[in-house]
Every structure is written in C-alpha cells, then in structure tokens.
Length: 297
Image (cartoon, rainbow, N blue to C red; front, top):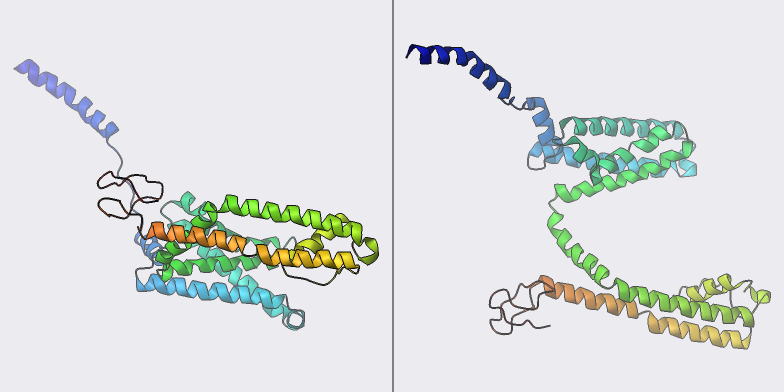
C-alpha cells in the first residue's frame, strides 16, 4: 500500500506535465471590432450591411462617371484638377475599404483569390500605376464590375438560374454553331476569291483578304458600302451573296432556340416516366428514378 502511494506521488508530476504539453491551445476569438466590421462589410442581413453596400455601389458608379467625364476633352481641360482630386479621393477610399476587407475576412487568401477580391484590387491598381504611365487611369472603368455586388444586396442571385439556362444552351449547341460558322467562313473565302478575280484592284478589291472582308460584311447584311462591285458579273455574285446571308441568318437562331427549349423542358421536369408519369429527371437519365421504367426522349 505504501509502495503504490509512493509510486502515484512520483508519477503525478510527470502526468501533469504531459497533460500540459498535450493540451491544445484554445483558438483565439476575433475581437468585437473585427466581428462588427465583418458583419457590416460582408453581410447584407443587417441594416448597416445593406446601407454600406448601397453606399459603396453609389461610390463606384460616381467614380466610374468621373473617369468617363475625364476622357471628354471639353470637360477635361477646365476641370482637370477637380477630376484628378476626385479620382484620387475615390482611390484612397477604395484602398481603405480593400484593406478593411482583408483585415476582417474569415479566410483572407480565399477573399484575395476570389473574383470580387481580384476586382477590388484591379479597381485601385490603375490609379497607382498612373504615377508611372498617365494613360493607366482610364483602366479605372473596371470599377464598374464591382456593381455586381448589387446581386447580393438585392437578393437577385436566385434569378441567375435563368441565366444558367442560356449558358447551358450555348454550351450544348457550341459544336453546331462552330460548324455553322466554319461553313460561313468557307463560303466567304470562295465568294471573296471570286470577287477578287472578277472585280480586281481597279474597283477596290485589292487583295483576297479584303475581298473576304467585303463578303463577310455583305453576308451579315451590314453593308458598309466602302467596297462595291461595278461589273455585271460582280453585281450578280453580290446579289447571290446577299440572298445567302438572308437565308442562313436564321440558322444559329434556330439552333439556339431549340437548345433553350430543351433546357427549359429539363429544368421544369417535363421529362416524364412512361409508366408512373413522374417528372424531375436528369437530362442524361434513361430510366425513371422512381419505378425504373424508360423515359420519354
């Protein structure tokens, strides 16, 4: 009994030292100031957060307006000093805001490498680069991208799902549209080469690339009129090119419309089972996820 008590007394300091060494340090909690700044700057649920984002959007719009007005010559001359003062004022304001965002962000690297973090950096960088190159100040119009924060403020993110339908339709039809554009390019090269041979440099068709440019302008029904055929054969070919342009202009529209209709049908869950008539299946599904039967194409 005495030996057991003595052993426990001898081992007690060792056990206590070991527990102290293995004890995990408690994570430091952010200060109340950092929490308040984080809630205001990154949050939109509180009135202060909404007010901050709206004021920020107004400041962004006004700063971009100042940059645009500074590019107008009859305004830049008499108000040059005022524009420079305003541009530097907005830049310092956004620099301060950028620094505060880094300070109170939960994951700083995640914010710095995010889309909004890069846009925030690019919105202030050109003004500092203007100290080296004066023309860099006009790159400040990139600040208009920061207005995209209004989607978060006004809770418009839910409407982005409708835009995703258009994006998926474009992605699904990319091969068909690529084939269509390749066909148009080949036709333009053929007609352009013919016009170069028939009209020649005398009537403005100085090279095959320039003749192809005329053909593309004509097929797209833009018709600048800077180059026009003068021979009878050239005018006949030009008329055929115009009719071809009107004939094929509806092709990409039809392709995209069909893909959009298919995406909307998929989104609304109109792909239904042959047996249980249940919808909501994935686009590439072949069998019903409720009863296992085949699906309508």
